[in-house]
Length: 203
Image (tube, rainbow, N blue to C red; front, side, top):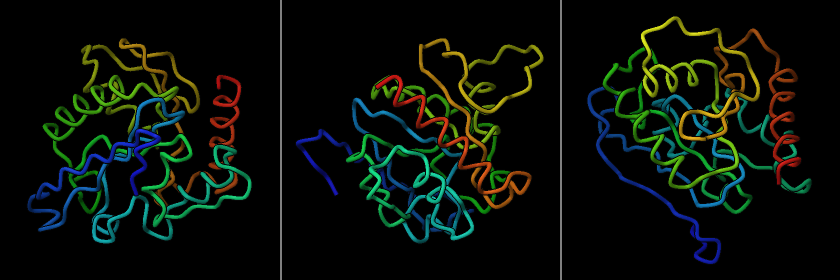
């Protein structure tokens, strides 16, 4: 759904995803200028790409965490089928790498290099208040391939990060994938609530 009055931009490149994704197509970016938060994932799973929606697997806890975050009106509850509506609420969706795979372990260094470069351009173009990275691994990829230093990287902590060299404010969320079983849904949702509280304070 597009709403020209809100200036919403749906970037759908519709490119073939290569061998791992067969003839699946990339999920579109749901981005617009002036968003409160842009959520950034690793890359779409084959499952999500097949259904055509972000975080579509029922075991992924993204939508449950988002609905508890305070970033949506109290009367609104969203699911994967509503991903295109997020910009209506000041939120956006994209991934570091657009190519769907069965797992992020199938991604190549070249995927990350081109993906991080493209992501940085998007964040600078749309200038959200904060980019929320879904998982420590997403932040590590952004840091490694966006700012290669050759030095030993500091351990990643959840929560608000220092602005990057381009001035983009970053916030690291726990991965909402079911693979991340070290944290409960309640614990993951608590970090989404912290993000919502930060956004409210800086609105």
